Length: 624
Image 1 (cartoon, helix red, strand yellow):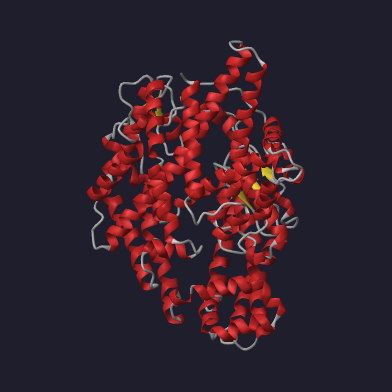
Image 2 (cartoon, one colour; image 1 turned 90 degrees about the vertical axis):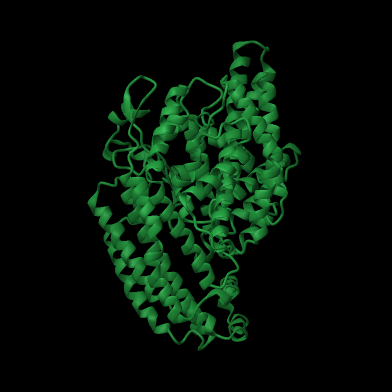
């Protein structure tokens, strides 16, 4: 990609309408957007009249809950529209202003409604539960009300909650400081690329250099990147230390046993889920060590360094994939989810869910977004690579999850926790991967060993297996290592220790040695990796990627097994589709049980570890 692609980058108006999302469907007349913003702020100001009256009667409480939902539903729609319009081309000042205006409105509405939860909890529990029995309309809010009661011990008085709300502008300071350092102030210098040209190293192109087949390029990128963090390590350590202290102090104020338990409380996740994940991954480390040994052998290096762990082990001819071909691959790869699922997805494509190509000013990366009553939109920057096909399938997994949920659940439960959201996207990726590997197996079976067709399929299968193994490594292993580091740093602060740069680097280097094993040299630079991870400023979050990946691995296995059994009914698929309809109507662990996995036990993670070990063995056998 690089410079050639940038030169050809088009203005948005140069892209065919059929490759743009149908965002106009949200606001055919933008004047309605301004009306919605005004109505929401006015309604929120009026909502304050409910203060002091929530406990008057069941009817009053129901009225308050419904009014609250109506305001947020309308405001969500306005914000999502403005944000996505801005993402189309961040240079357009009109949409920058609309985005800012909607965020100001959100702050005003949140402030007007800040009395709600403390006052709800002031109502005696017996009276509150009696309201649910008395008023049929409150039945839909039963889970919400009982969940709020569950958190009662950790909700402060109205005055204290008001102080905490005002302090929130300050408590995010460490994150803001790191973000500005990381994204605005830090420069990583220039390195020589594969063509012998000096190019600027950036956050955006770093990983592509780490995947370079030229080892000198990888090493130069690695050393240049970390030099910038090493130069600022004491500043970054101070920011991270205060971020961790904020977590610890906040959890104490809210009367939690630890900052970890405070972070898990929202989703009602037992601490054992977190610690079991770490333990299960530790138990699976021998397979990782075997993979690193194989990586060292296939790269033909005397020593395997940390700048050698991202480069693909198998080279394939990088054939471009058209967007239409990518959609056909998605259709075939997800066929096991049934005709109804595929039709819904393909109809979504026709309706204008997806914004396909990059244009000048467009937000980078990919996401699934939308409001409760809009299409579940997908932003892409499609460039015609195989990885882009996986990106489409991943984001459509999120959007299909939203489609099923919003069709079934009321607004109050129409969203997803991160714990469950990552499952829907990763199931799709796993199913596509299994489909593509199966395709190569079929070609190899039907062609003569040694023929070009056979050898091409074999190479592609090895490439896919390596890609699959890398997904496990970067999601399940790497995110768990991050989760363990977060646990160690927070425990240290809770025990009165000081998070110095030296302490953090020493602990991180120890973890890196544990997770990668003796076949990888622990380069001095890698001890500083913790200093460049933005996720650490939102503590105890990354473990959800690892649990989500484990759950998705188990669910995709169940669905494939259902297909192989050859019966008309695929119970695993039907259970999974039922799970997609549930939104936030229960706690994540309970919802995932519907799909056939119990994340309250070690079983799904151990199963994922077994799959990883089998993939490594299969890959090793093919590479002999």
